[in-house]
Amino acid sequence: MDKEHFLSPDTFEEYYKPVFNKTRNYKLREVIQFLIVLPFELALSENSIISFLEENEIYCFSFCRQEKETSYSAGGKVDSKIPYYVTCVEMSLFTEKVYFLNEKLRSVIFDSMLKYLNYVIISYLIKTKQVDVYKISREMLEPSSLSRHLMIPEFKIKDEILFFLHLNLVTQKELIDMDKQGEIVQFTNVIKDQINPFILSEELMMSARRNIQLGFYKETIINAQTSIETLLRTLYMELLKIEGIPVEEIEKKQKVVGFITMVKKEFSTRIGGSWDVTNTRKEVGNWHENCYELRNRIIHGGYQPDYSETIMGIHSAQKLREYVVERLKRTPKFKVLTDYL
Image (tube, rainbow, N blue to C red; front, top):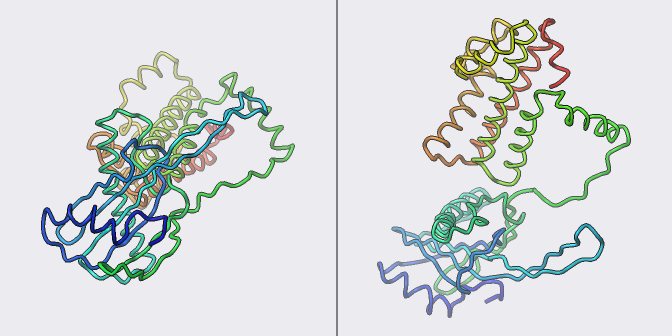
């Protein structure tokens, strides 16, 4: 067999099969494999094997270390080379079924295997307290994985492909033009002097967009929802200021008016529009269902959102932000606030 894989006819008989047969006499017919490199090191023994034995299939993971090299220049041009390790994982699904793989089915199997691998990773994290280790998603991995589909016990290859996980490739940025650079320089004073009250909300939304690109789904929703809460709380305060409400009274209102109560009652009379959180066909209701409630499930119930839920959540938050700006543009009394948004 090829040198990339640990699984071979010999290793199967010596290391895998004895463990499998301790539980039951599996009649395995195929194995589907993916090779991945974790973005961190699991300090496990070389070629450690961890298996999850299910009714008709076995999720199996073998681990090995790969040496890499990074450099530190202390801000200069002289590099200091530092070796370090990452962990390579050979993910294998042994099955009694016969699969006819297409791209969609292969993707479903990959996600299922990643779910089982995360059981190992979270267990490792809790038991070792090594905080540089974290639950992974496919966006955190290299853009592609070598995948092969074998018949066993004869180890005949049915197919072997490069399976693409995502499109987050490293690219060189195009230099921004001088006009944009001028805008950046001018805006630094806005940041320094805290002129724009909505900056934190914008920062949090940028963090959410970065999180989804990196594959941190929970953090995406938490940041997106926090961004909206910061936006609406700040907006409420600025509306009251324009209405001439004293600062002391504004602070009191911010403390006693609950967030959802504020959403339902404080904006419709000032900037118009639909603020019914139950009408999911509109921006506010869509955000409430797909972002606000999802964040609550994560925070209060330990829910783990998937990719599609995360995309829907951050999209609904961005649409709500656009909706707020549009409502302000239509309200002469408060239109000045759009200069900050």
